[in-house]
Length: 142
Image 1 (tube, rainbow, N blue to C red):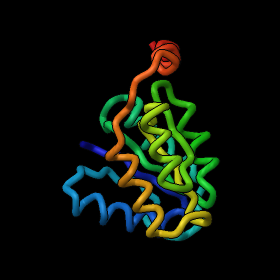
Image 2 (image 1 turned 180 degrees about the vertical axis):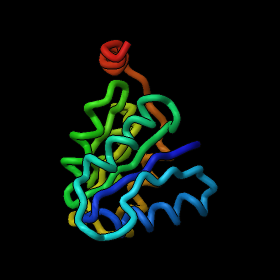
Image 3 (image 1 turned 135 degrees about the vertical axis):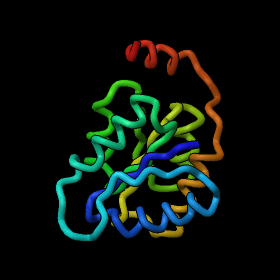
Image 4 (image 1 turned 45 degrees about the vertical axis):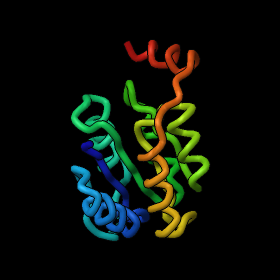
């Protein structure tokens, strides 16, 4: 599976840890930046990651910031992207199982690195349970 990942400066540290974690599990990770903790405008990095998921170049995506809210809003502007803000493993499980989230957004200021890795693990391991409501939402993308 190919996973897009991007962050602003406020999510850079967790992004680096997640890349290491995913690489050890043999995921193909595409890093859209940023590449340091220096201040940047998050849309410059989140948009290309979301576009890669929307185009099908990456099957999933992870975006990070201080709270994760702005990053999720930016990612969700793209057709076929379903990005959920996750702050624990239960929100990650439900985002996948009930909402078929193909992207998640994490806030480095709100979750520990250990929790971030657990969230990513849960989200990747959870299957979509299906549902009529999601099929109707996905029809909007057609």
